[in-house]
Amino acid sequence: MTDTGPTAIKTTVPRRILDVRGLSKHFPVTVGILRREVAKIRAVDDVTFHVHAGETLGLVGESGCGKTTTGRCLLRALDPTAGEIIFDPGDVEPVDVAALKGKALKVLRQDMQMVFQDPFSSLNPRWTLLDLVGEPLVAYGVSRGKALETRVAELLRSVGLRPEYMRRYPHAFSGGERQRIGIARALALNPKLVVADEPVSALDVSVRAQTLNLLADLQEELSLTYIFISHDLSVVQHICDRVVVMYSGRVVEVADTDDLFSAPLHPYTEALLSAVPKPNPDAAKNRIVLKGEIADPANAPSGCAFHPRCTYAKDICRQQAPPLTTMESGREVRCHLAAELTLAGVN
Ligand code: SF4
Image (cartoon, rainbow, N blue to C red; front, side):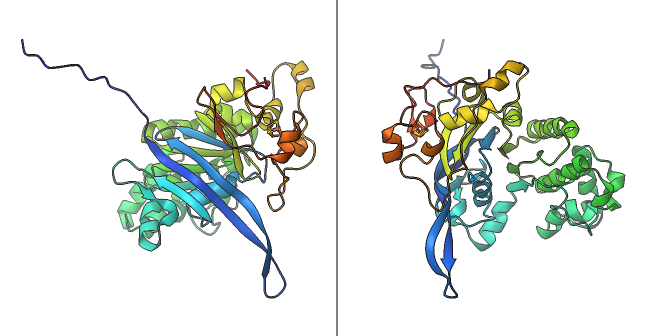
């Protein structure tokens, strides 16, 4: 018998399709005709997180927390002020999206696409479905003529729309159907990563579940990775594997969805979760109503940006900004008191 040596132990470490390191996007506040800069809006400030290939990562927080600006920087719809966005599609060498220019950036955009929030304003009303869904294919020289029609028909079928509709205009469709058109357009170039910015928040409740199920089916079928931007925690709980919580342009907590919902570590996450609808009517009594507005990113409070709204704040919170810390459990949180607080989840 031949000795084949020790059996190799196989470990499966999920590939990071995206590694975001120290990403910032600052907008200058200017005055006068000389546009003198008097302040900076730190819309995204030193944001670090990663996305595993094949997962759905939720990016959540109130309006103005920086989640949409982060998503737009990832796709270079906005140029970041600082930081790295390492994209590893798996079949070619990883690249820093933040540093790409010109043709290299255009090539990369095939792999990273966006689904927009508003299916009414994101589709050109003068274009037919053939124009809308086929435009990326024409722009990238992938197909034209009969081959283009065949591919558009296939894309429409994949999102549950009939190919015979390809000569119609968007106004002939409902909100849910228009969002399906937007999804078909985003998938035209076979992307690996899709950033979906509040993709169901403009839809009727009755069609939200159908759209979420469609996104889940397409993910499995096409091995897609999603970044799902949302303020609606109940939707995030339904669709996301992991969640990044943002407040005032910064990451305040990162966790697996189940862990985050059952035992949040950051008081802001606890407050967001308290607003998730629950079947028990008594649960409404436990809702945490946050005082005041989200911190102004042009003039953030000293110390922890959340301290003016936090019911647990102590002196240290007003004086020192907490770092994003990895706890023993591997979870990440930005709070001085994370190790001593026991916060309420929803499960
Ligand atoms: Fe609240 Fe202090 Fe934690 Fe900030 S650091 S979230 S103010 S307890």
